[in-house]
Length: 339
Ligand code: NAD
Ligand code: UFG
Image (cartoon, rainbow, N blue to C red; front, side):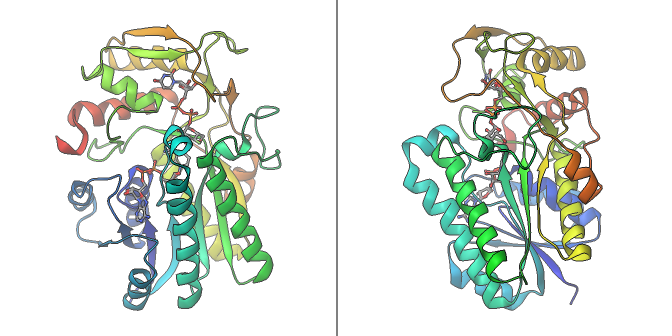
């Protein structure tokens, strides 16, 4: 049987796009997801894009027996671990749920991989591990500091992976620190479908554009940034997905572990993103300036040198393309996967 890549959380936003990119690149894919933050309809959409080239297992990654049966059934050679909870605000009010799910699933998965003799993992980390950065662009060598429970779960998992590599050099691990993933597959068939009120900027903008929300609140206009609004490194989800293929190839060829930022290296303000969206899509976006959101930093964007030198990867799509693709997805699917 052809070797497979196991994608945990593969029904989610980034996992589903990565599954498509991997299948396009000829990988055989197994998705495991408990659908706690995704719709089973994603799987039909993946079949629409890629045919029946993948297997789906509905299970919780904390369930060791379920993982053992996946490893027994399929010749898995590498794992991409996306499964996790990701809402910063929720993590502050429900920290145990975050530690249980994010740290618990990673421990359970690493144990099952060890039992199955599979020791190649790509891990979804986040720029949130840099906390309030002392300088931008942020390099991988920057100081790490968790400022909320969600960030702490990522930092604990990163530390765990570093300890594991120290203990057993057979482990090959790529820790990928994502900046702000936005956009959708260019077909508009899969995209980001947050449940309830979006926490993140781009899905909020597209929901205003489609008429689901009345106006966008711009959180803060008094930051020390060129126009006073927060600056982030928005990266097209298809570029991010390609970064995972580059990381898998690196692990296979170089047999050495890495920790890299996946961003574009360009800071874009909230106001610039809104203005670009309006220009590219022709949709008006009503907005109001409101107070800063607690816990937000002024500016966060990546130093992307290491990704280019070690993975030979760099982002290709600009902000206009991110807006165009995000809008295509939202306008074709006004209520996400319920459409
Ligand atoms: P998502 O919620 O869309 O996808 C996560 C998927 O994991 C969902 O389908 C969910 O059902 C599944 N899942 C959660 N816990 C599970 C468990 N215990 N067992 C099985 N399945 C489980 O989120 P996403 O945006 O695709 O994020 C993927 C990963 O990337 C997460 O680890 C997230 O923390 C990380 N990340 C995301 C962002 C972002 O802005 N989207 C930024 C940095 C890092
Ligand atoms: N913003 C608004 N209005 C909104 C939503 C966001 O003005 O309705 C602003 C924020 O204040 C910030 C910018 O838009 O300046 C981006 O905010 P997001 O919530 O989209 O993204 P964050 O940078 O706050 O956080 C995201 C993920 C985190 C992850 C981090 C770094 O939500 O999980 O990127 O990868 F850790």
